Image (tube, rainbow, N blue to C red; front, side, top):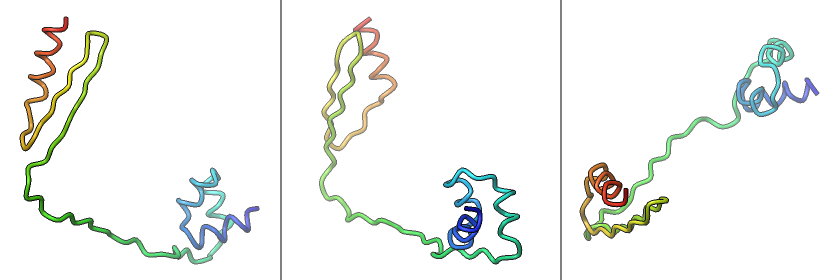
Length: 93
């Protein structure tokens, strides 16, 4: 088992393998010996770009508690959420 885990650590990295297989990091490192650790795939950075939006966004938020239910529909604005929720609690309470 340790030989297979050491091979996985060489491919995917010591920390990742020890964590995934729930093995003792130090013990797995000893089983690697002087073997070189080289992750199989380099870390990559992905940036997701979205096209610009010409129209204001629309959003509906519903909040429900034992005091009642509130539904807020918005288009192109962001309300002052703390003040809105405070006022709702005062009216519902």
